[in-house]
Image (cartoon, rainbow, N blue to C red; front, side, top):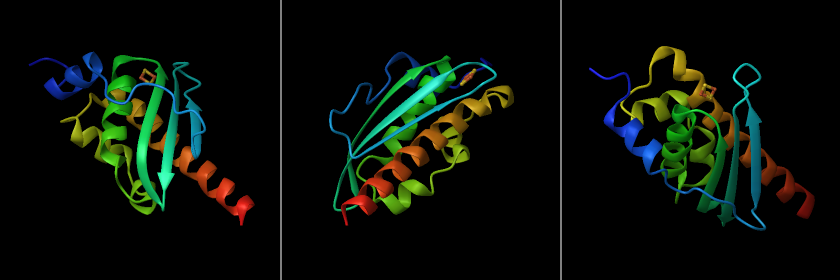
Length: 127
Ligand code: FES
């Protein structure tokens, strides 16, 4: 059996939602100090629904697959639901990650939470 599932390989080779959103409503960036990988997530939000999401990841294949899957999981969802996305759910949607690669999915969860916090703080300033 190969180390990585078909889904991980698919999202690594053909990542969904790669790119930048200009004037995003929320931007989140996180890094892992140990491996040096960096992930950035951009959100477009209308009426508390995530209408668009893009990512840029400078990192390993699992980090790219995790970002790709995570963006797919929150696209079109209410912000409250996206806030509850866990790295475990991302890894499960990818049909699993090797144990020593689980931290790559944590990066995706943290980047999304960061972007949502950015959105909430921007919203608070406006009102
Ligand atoms: Fe660091 Fe994958 S090895 S995010």
